[in-house]
Length: 188
Image 1 (spheres, one colour):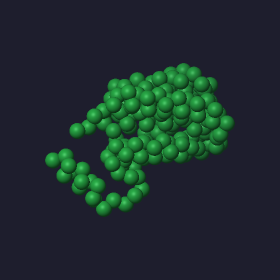
Image 2: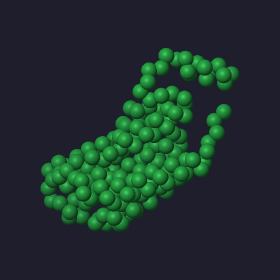
Image 3: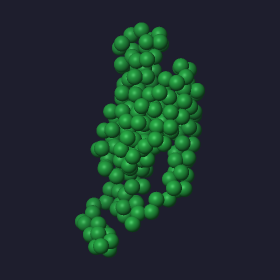
Image 4: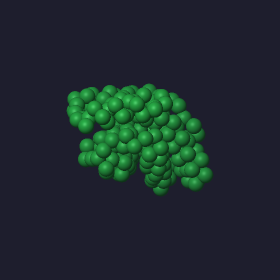
C-alpha cells in the first residue's frame, strides 16, 4: 500500500523552486559560454513536470517561465509560453517518470529542453536580437542547451535517489533480487 504525503511533496517542490530561483538570480547571469546562459527555470519546470505532471505542471511551467522573463531582458511571456508547452509535453502522463529510470528521464528532458531553447532563441533572432545563424546555433542554442543539461543532472540524480529510496533500493548498489523478493512476498 502506497501512501502519498501531499505535504512532503509540496515542501519538496517549494524547496526546489527556492533553490532554482536563487541559482537563476545568482549563478545564471555570471556563468556563460558564448552568449548562452543556464536556464534554471527550465530545469525547475521540467523536474516538476517529470515528477508530478498534469495540470499543476502546466501552471508551474507558466509561472517558472514568467519569473525567467521578468529576470531577463527579453519579451515578457516568451519563455512562459515555451515552458508551458514543455511542461504539458513532459507531464501529460500524470505520473512520476523518474520511476522509469535514467535514460527515459534524460532523453525526455534533452529533447524537450533543446526544442524549448531552440524556439526561444529562434524567436529572439526574429525579434532582431542577432542576425547570424552561426551566432544563433553555435553561440546561443548549443551552449545554453549544454549548460542547462549539465545543470539538470544533479537535480535528476537527487530525484532518482528519492524514487530509489521510496522503493527500498540503493542507487548505484548492485541488487541480487533479495530485497525486491522480500517486499513482493511480504505484500502478498
